[in-house]
Each structure stands twice: as structure tokens, then as C-alpha cells.
Length: 518
Image (tube, rainbow, N blue to C red; front, side, top):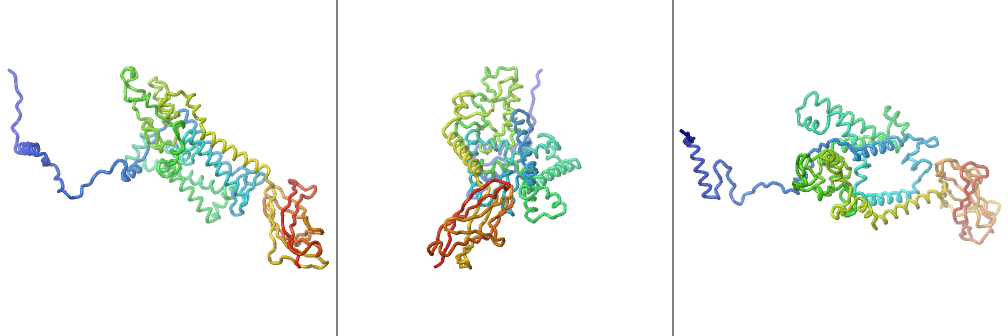
């Protein structure tokens, strides 16, 4: 005898709900029972923000990115550049050159020391040329390989790498950090957070102290710091640069690269289809999906991408490189290392994500053919301009005279007659010695017969200009009253090194005018 399940009779509530549902089906305009009533027509209705609205973008800013650690070829290169750049930054101020700091930007004395080179405000043209070279080099590197500078040598990237290394050593890798942040505050969490920020602040303070060491003798900063003898501006820049390092590398991180860096915004006008950038091979990878390593994925109609999302987890800016080239990508290659490890485990060829060009993916070019496409006109123009400017800058510095002289007339008295039937003009000679050795010079003048030159108040024709300094010397030039007709006459000051003096041997002349009264 078979048994048939019999449903229990509906109660009043069930019957009422069924009746309401039936009524709603009969009248589609009415809401189902239990649902909130729709506002009458004409009233404001809240709507979710569009995907690309300001609200949605601000929400993205508040989402914290937890990059996962990764090892591989490009991770090793990033470590090399971190060590190299920090050795230069922290070590260069301590290098000595002939008894002084090798690199020192002495703003108070208005002198820049670069090893054996001393630059004065009059040498601002060299700074302008250097800035032009840097800009053209940035254009060149971007046209060749995208944001290569951002991924390996940018200070924001370098200090973010250092801060994240400290964070991983204290709090653990990605999953451990996520769990720690989501967990309630305990003694362990406080200890880890305090320890992490203590090391961050110590490194930021060291960075700020080193920064001001480029503008003040760094060997004196330690004593001045601990005895509270630093100047107001030194305190300001040390704290400002340290706070900026702590804030940018510890908190803002990828937000600086995505929203604050102007280079991220205008790089799109400097890249083209032949630029080498971090690229996902969509032809080979799609359609993506999970699978067992034992199946024939090609026979199953699947691409090489297993959709593991490791490329997203290791990205320091939190983007998915499979969505194509994005301005947020800094070209660090972390996704390449992660993807190559997955490809090795799946026994697939490496390079599903790699440095290549858009044209190579679309046209199926091999690596050699893609590299040949790098030598295009814009690259040759950028490279030629950089080489030309570098050659011009180095040539100018090589032939640059270590002595610069400016002649200034005394405007108080144009000329005056002195005993002996002579006319006297007074000048001020501004000597700028850009070398590291003192210069001894002998002054003379030519252009009129019988000219004599004497410095004041020594009444000598010799001048000693100390090393890496400037000297203002009053000079008296005399000529016979009948040396020429009244009026202004061109003359030249001649400066020659004293015989047997140390330092470079110089022979300079500077134009001036001598006035003979009526």
C-alpha cells in the first residue's frame, strides 16, 4: 500500500499571503505583500551611483589594497634598484671631496658643490639644460617601455616597497594582514601596529634628516639635532619630508600613483602600439577558467589563463592587467612573476603576461620582431636630442673657465683728475673662483697709452681669490690727461695667473670703458 504525502491545510496567514500574491499577479502594478510601498509619482527616489561617477571613484579610494608578496626575476630587479637608489641617497652626503662634502647645495652661500664642480647662480643655464635632458629622457623611456621609471626607481615605489617589507615582516603576508585589520583590537594587534609604525617613523625620520643633509653639512647635523641647534627651516624640511615619506609610503601608497601623479595621466600620449608595456596575451589566455592540470584545456576550448587572480593579488595598485593597459599600471612586473609561477605549475609556457607591445599581440609577432619595431622615428628623435644635449653640456663644462670676472663702473664718480696730470676711473671687479684652489692674478689694462691699474687699498696689481668663493675688489685705473680725446674710450682688463702660482694657469680679459673729461 503506497502512502501519499498530504500537505497540511494552510493557516490564515498562509492563505492571506497566497491571496495577495495572486492579486499581485493579476495586477502587475501593485507591490507584493510585505514589500515596502513605492513612493507616489513625483517624489525623489534615491538611485545607486553610476559605475564611473565621483561617488564610486571616492569609494574606490577608501578600499585598502593588500599586495601579496611574490618572487621572481622582476621582483629581484626591484630589490636591486631599491638597494642601489638608497645607497646613493643615504650614502652620497657622507662622501668627502678634497676636505668638503662632495654633493652640497649650499643655498645660504648660493653655491652648489658637485664633486669637483662648483656652480653659482650665474650657472643656472646648466640647471635648465639638465632639466630638459631629464624631461627628454623620461619621454624616451616612456616611449620605449612605458612607466619603467615608476616601477623600479620612483621614490614613491621604492619607499612603498621598503615600508611593505617592514609590514610583512611584522604582520605577515596578505591574508594575515587582512585578518589582523578585521580583527578586534587586542594586546597583540596593538603591539604589532605600534611596532610597525615605530619602524616606519624611524625610517621616515632618517630619510628627512638625510634630505636636509644635501643642503647643510651632514656631519654637523647630528650634533645640531641632539642639541636642538637646527635652524627653523631645517626643522621644517626634516619634519615635512619625514612626514611625507611616512604618509605616502605607509598610507597613501597606490593612491599617489593612481590619483596624484601627473605622469600617470599624460603617459598615454607618449606610448603607442609599439611601446613595450606589461601586457596580458588575451589571444593565448582566453577563454579563461579553472581546470585540472591533467585535462587537455585546448581540446576543451579553454585558454591558458586559469583565472587564479594572483596577478591581481600581487599588484601594488590593485588593478587587473587582463583588462588591458591602464594608466594605473606602474610597470613593475609583479604580475609577470606571479603568472609565470602559475604557468610553471600548470606546465604551460611562460609569458602569458609579459613585457611586449600591443602590435606584437595583435599581429602575432615574436620577441625579435617586436624589438625591431622599437627603433621608430620618435625613439630616434628623442635619443638624438638627449645625446646632443648631454654632449653639449659635458663639452661646456669641460671648457668652462674656473674664473669669472664682472666689471662694474663706480657710478658715483665717472672720472676725476689726480696729481701728476692723470685721469682716474674707479671700477669694482667681481671675481668668482669656481675651482677648489686659490687663484693669484696679476691685473693690467690695455686700450689707451699709459694705463695703470691698482687695487684698493693695497695699491697693488695682484689679487688673490680664495677657492670656491667670490671677491669684490675696488680697482683704480689711471691714464695721462692727454692720452686721448675727451669722451668714452673702450679698454680691456687683462687677468693673468702669477708666475709659479698653484692652480690653473689663466689668461682672461674683460671689456670696459674709460672716460676722459673735457
